[in-house]
Image (tube, rainbow, N blue to C red):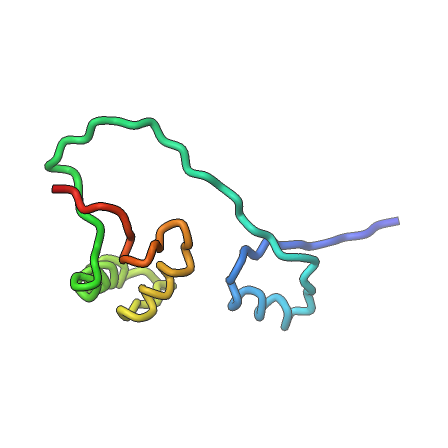
Length: 106
C-alpha cells in the first residue's frame, strides 16, 4: 500500500499562488493566518540612527526609494503611492489613520 501526497502552505492573500496551484489540480483545505506578535528588548538608539515615520506628503518619495532599492529583484512589483497605501492599510497594526501612525521623533 503506497500513498503519496504533496502539499504546500500558501499564506493569506497570495492569490497568484492560489491560482497557480488551483490550475495544477490542488484544492484549498483551509485558510492559514499568521498570528504573531513581535517582541523586542528596548534599547537606547543614538538619534543619528533614528528616523521619522513617513507622512502623506512624503509618501511619493518613500515609494520612489522603495522601488529604486528593489528594482533589480526578479519578482518585485513596483509600488505606486496608491498601492503602497493599500498595503499599509492591509497591515492593520501599522495603519492608524495616519501614514504609519505614531508620533514623529524630534
